[in-house]
Image 1 (cartoon, rainbow, N blue to C red):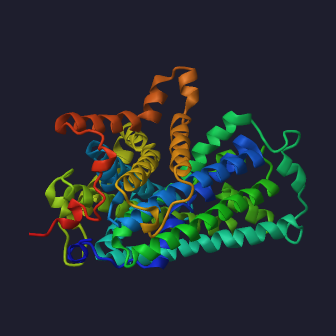
Image 2: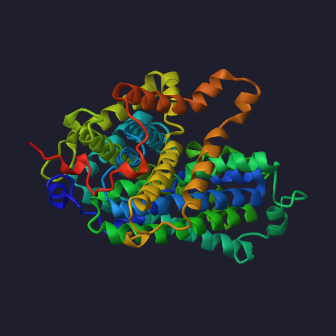
Length: 489
């Protein structure tokens, strides 16, 4: 590995605790604190738990697939490079731009959300002021050093984890009648005469989508591997720790919410960042007699949104950086300063985030389309990880290597990546099936826009550069990439 070149460019300053909390904090956020209520409302208590377990298992296999590749070949912005080396350069090109676009838009969405959340405490102020301040804060954290990003994520993730633990403790005490008033837990969990399942399989499929969005962010471990001090140890440890914690947090949290709040409660569907008082977490705290529940949850949700924006800035910056060094983006984005920060990539990402944020103020319709265009890109990244790992392992064996050589080995190959691939595609298709049933073309375009954009990127590069699927015996298994061997002029 070109360790010295990496040392002169991006810095390996992220510790195991950083990677663990980045992966854990990346998917504990508004998906759990807010959207979990709508999952229970749509599919019932047991339907929601079933959907989250299924998607959780899929995410586990995705993380082990990514872990195997990231420990063998720890690279910054790994997805694009793995897709390029193991599948097809056109696939890597589309994957890289797709993922960068996803997080650049997410950065803007989160910045706009900060203004909405602050409106709870200061309703008389302009929301754009708080959103702009959030962007400046996130930019400042990311331009200092990769360590400042890691430390910020570590402590913000700690806040979210502590909140979930307190919530679970309060919820269980309420279930057993120690706190709050008596609640018919059995009736709530069984959802009356439905047996806990509401709406059948279509409802569970709809919750697959909610759960999928909730778990997005776990793949950040692959982005951070190239800046980890000890990727061979940190990545496997982060994956092993994080999966069980995530699954326990989500399943137990949904169980507590479902036990204490009827799935018919209209507040479960109305909860969002603008109505923090009816977040399912806030509702449970109120049932336990905690009057300050809404303010507490607003502070936690604010932390979650800033954390998501911080991760978005980091992930998109590093992806643009590695694409530049792979020849997929202008060379200027591949330059770094003495602290190992790709400043041009950071400025470029911030500019796109700022532009998107401004459209939310002056052109709401354009903003809706920009957000929609990035809507499925996280799931497309998951498809790319599954395909890349399937090809990597097959090429590894085809070229005479033994899996005993791998420092971290993904479980149940090839079942794992194939299951992740099938479920990811199922989630993509199931985003808005109703729009096809009624032929609502506007909703179809808004919902599925990411897919044709990905295909346009793929075929543009494939036709222009005449690329092809790389034969397994020709797959490049060397532990370097153009992004590592590139030296600063």
